[in-house]
View: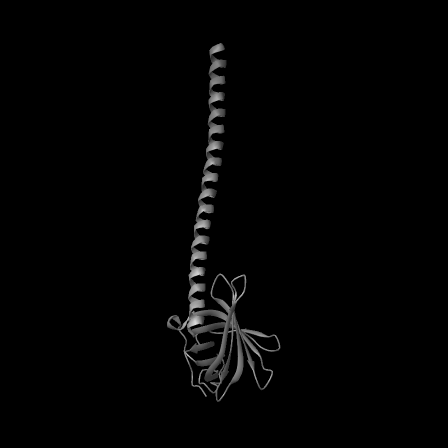
Length: 196
């Protein structure tokens, strides 16, 4: 009987040890998976920050070279209404003293530019670029042409190429704000309609 009790005690101790080891092993595996996920998230975040820094530097260099395009994916009208739009056909372009403002909406009516909106060209002047303590860049200039006479205000936030442009016409109060990405002219993929 003593042998039987000793054998049962040995089996129970072995089962308890195995269960304890399994719990520890499961906890260790869970901790390892969590550490791997955290390391992957940190790596992705670091890559994203590097990409944002590069795009910010490119955008600032393009502003200073006066060769940039703000490709808008959202338009806000004077009354506060917003519309999501195609960034290939909604933009503000500046190229060495010449500027273009184009807005185009997905409508049945082709509009004056042939793609559902308006495209106006003009010459730019009085471009002023300032950078605040946080690294946000503000740019303002005038654009004058046959179909446009307006003040343009661009705000580029630090840490990426996200920017906002406010177009304020000189002869009426139809202010319009476009939000999108500011890219160098060479990296832009815009489609320009007929201008006037």
